[in-house]
Length: 217
Figure (cartoon, one colour):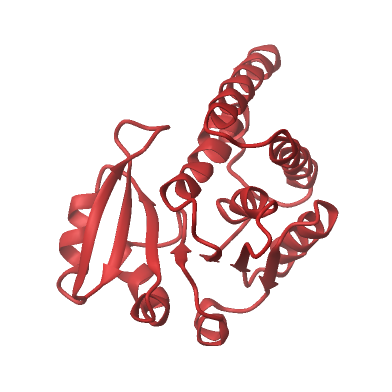
């Protein structure tokens, strides 16, 4: 793909995403934070691998809107936890959406030191309500406060996500986990090891993708 075509695709994706978020009631201040985050993400991407290079032309739809839709499913949730945050997807996007809530907060767990440093830099630069935990998920989860929603994107199969988030789910949190076309197979496998209730939400960015909503019973 030529650089010119990549630029056009990125611009059109940005416009569509900002329009979609604006139509859903997201403020101009929040949209500005998201734009600043994308700029920092692309800047740091030149030094460390935060997202797949092939997804950069479609960064607004593939990453920003795809992450923001999780918040849309639980707009009243105040405290979130994002497991394996990587470059901040969906964690930083959700933090941007929580920034105007007086008591909104998200805990980002990322054991990779360089990625955790990036998350801290973004959080500080944009004054986001994010707490960064640069440790393993297994070490961070037991120390987290009461959580409303736990999420993870492109991290592990569902059965492993339930193992990582079990303590949070048992304490009343809801899990929101984006999944692809193999979601039914992952649900079947997870039910061999866990008892839970689930609901599937259609993805606004990919007709073959689903968001699995999990609650423990």
